[in-house]
Image (cartoon, rainbow, N blue to C red; front, side, top):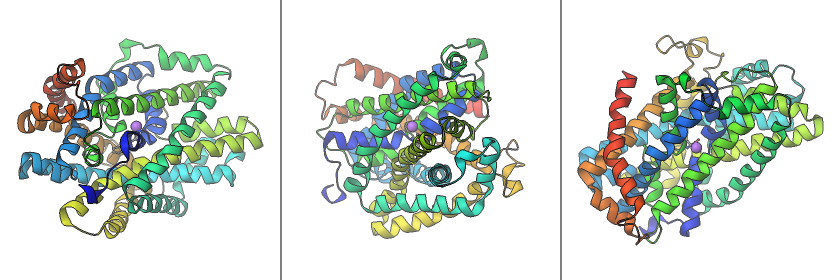
Length: 448
Ligand code: PHE
Ligand code: NA
């Protein structure tokens, strides 16, 4: 274990896991999915999923990682045998595919930062058109996505302690502050209250299977669950740490940021008279309009800060996505870390190219014949969401059926002597035993 490196103490791990959790899904995905799914109803089901299913899954996943002390594939193999190793491998492959499109969107955020700070973004008069033109410009996007991936690779090469921890320590608090500032500003705009009503007052007659499904998969995605990313991070956690406590901090932090992002976006959407159901472009179309309204100087400062922070939120998530396959090749194949990182970055970039070109540049990728006429990026995102949720549920089955609950409980008692007999134990054990496998059943029905 010692030569693999550890997180430096409690804060180090919490910051890294929070950094992995808080990302594009909080600020980019959560608002647009909530907007497409009736606002408050979506928020309600999302919160339910987070606390009912996701929190216990997170605890279990970190426990597996720490107990095994190795990468996702190695952990399942070590605790469960070769066959279970496949589940770890499944996660490693999902991580590669998620990063392939996630990095493209991070590239958008990077590009929007550049265009706001140094370019003409604030002078545009139609941000829908601006976005379409922006994503259509393959050359630019190629550069932004490649730049972002290189940054991720560089951070991962530097290793656990320096790369991941230092970044998170500064970035998370700044993100939080700018969100608060923008919320206060957005609430002063005309018609802001209509946005608040849409976001906070649920109309339960609007619940559909789609709403439940979208909320469920987003809740797994937002906490980085189900693909072994947290097994990998868990393997770097010291035995003296309290996993349950750490998980609750991560869960709350992530949930609060998503909630705040909604609180920021919906008043803006309604006061600008836009549709909340716009889809993946929502944040990229709504936010610039607001910055424009702040005047050329303040708008440029606040706007560039916002998009820069979006990049900052995305970076630790990208790092954790890359660390997942990297740990696999380093731990299992004994390849040198540096080589693994750059080879994987190359592969991931190539896999991401169709996503990068799926917004207009290549019409066939913009309207997929085999997938609801949606774009390729959405296709990969939807597909990987499902693997994530299914991966999380299979992990619960692994804990109950193979690894056994008492082993998990023993792992969780290390660093938390009060765990046996506590409410937390009852709740975590119950959920993992009953709700999560049940969920898998429901999910497969929903998908088929
Ligand atoms: N949780 C990250 C986000 O919210 C995305 C992510 C998913 C990161 C899975 C790692 C693993 O944006
Ligand atoms: Na998140």
